[in-house]
Length: 73
Image 1: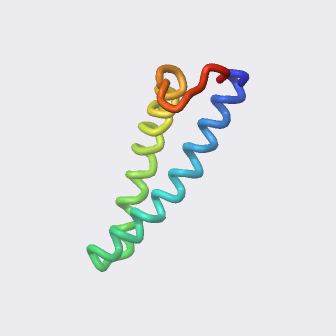
Image 2: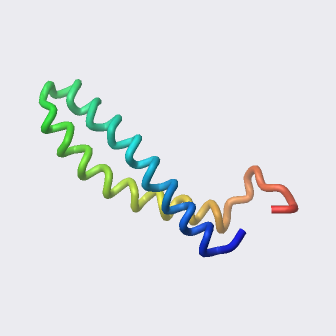
């Protein structure tokens, strides 16, 4: 797989997964506190921090992870 294409794919996966995760965090924050705005605030901060962490995690797995790889990959 071309390096540039794989970076775009990892970035796209990072963004879409973060949207799903953030919606989950907002709902949980709202349920736990009873205040939807607290859920939104926590979700907003969490979206940024976890997106950065996930991207570097994905890149590390792509570069160094051998679990589940076959010889032809």
